[in-house]
Image: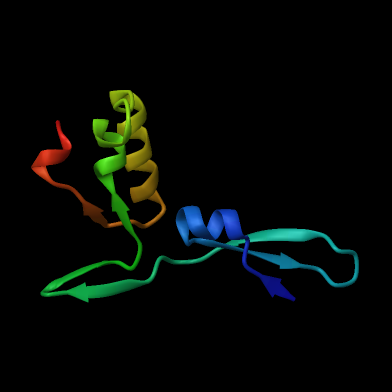
Length: 89
C-alpha cells in the first residue's frame, strides 16, 4: 500500500511513504520532480515563491538561511523560482 507523506509531499513533492501491510513499517521513497514546458523552457511543476524570504511578510529571513532554503529546493529538483525586483535583494 502506498500513501503520500503529506508534509513531505507539500514541502518537496519528491517523496512518498510505502507502508508494509505485514508489519506496518514505513519506507520513504524518493521520486523525480515532474516538469512542464514554460514557453521554450522546461521547469519543475512545483515552483518556489521567493517573496517570503524578503521583508514582505514580516521581517526578512537571515541571508544565510534564505540561501540554504533556495539551495535545498534546487537539490530536490525545483527549477522554477518566482522572483521579482520588488521582493528585495
